[in-house]
Image (cartoon, rainbow, N blue to C red; front, side, top):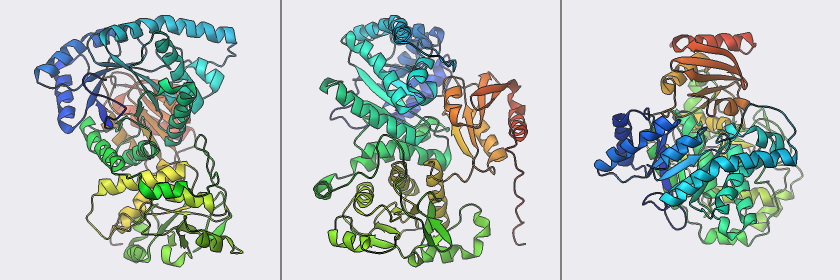
Length: 577
């Protein structure tokens, strides 16, 4: 229970978000909490970076309750145990991050002996036990929330920067809580990379089952630093949607670099899609079929296939994932291919020679596998199967030499004015999930009728899943009360200045909580160092400090140029020339 809201068990999947106002500003915080609750948010998180900030949670709570709103409040704690102890007095739940709650992260490389490791755990226990006891006494819940970007030096040196390290980091803290017979716990394993996130949650579930039947704690899902706009929604749908389809997840937060209220419709759409999934008789039919392992749910490896050539494009093997479209859409776009830029149609479906089969049909599979040469293969339209299990079944039953064409839906849309958000999330969840499993060599969007939009979404899904990097990738955190500059405006300016660069990864972080860690995979970072001041990073190393915000984007461009990664933006022909 989080206040009066049940999480896990037979309860519905709960939707969360986080306010962006300064925690010391009671009026602004109360307004944002009420706006989120009005929009359908069921649990609201507020940052409490120091004890002074945490103390004002009392007044925020009182203001929210005086307005007649009973939405549970959560204190977001990172470095300060004393802030957690203060916050637990006033809110229904406390979130702690094992990587930086009484732990160290200096990127030090050292060899921890067993004695050294145990000594660190003893030190952490002394800091953590008082919080557990206070939550026990006051009836507070707790989220043990590991972030990929903030694993401690101790964990990094023993387990590496891995999903296993994320899981073990959380388990260490939960063991301390269980020693005190405290069980009001929710787990999370958040990362900005959907592949890492998916693997970590799956591994967590297996580890909890190994620990025993009484370790079945609720799970909170989220892709941290997903970004904004279409890219942020796609990345969130890949990570969260994939796990919901796996049957994992009791509460979710969609982390967008936008007004928090805009997160709620996206989250609600994801939950509706999951609750509308039947599970049904066709999946029981699939379970009776002979399946061969075709993917590892805990580590990414692309399904091997032979290389084939279609329409001048090679696909399969280690070649680029290709984008397929219909003849109708190709013809609609033929006059404006140059204007499409990177979003080019590559293969026409009707000319691809693709073989459509029912993966449950032995005769169709045998006929395909009897061919002397490999063929592009896909699941036929109109089958009574969910997309993800259908393609997993296909990959498990046909010979690996055949490349696979993925589809977002098995019933092509004929509507030009459908619900684009629903279409976007469905495509990202289905195709993105399969790509993260290592299944697929080409993609076809059937759920979006608009030709240009279907191509753009196809490419953006490939980018978000890390399958085909064709543009700058932004790791941008959502705003919160810790943010030291206007994240939305800064992200927009950075996109405008760098969006033409190919394959570069830029992290935009409001503060240092997750910054250096989440930037481990980024080429460059733009991080709030002080109010109105920006620190610039190369990888995880800060190289320029306290740059005035109004100069920071230009200095970032200079830094990219210094490292030989800059190219001038292309000059577009004027319209009509």
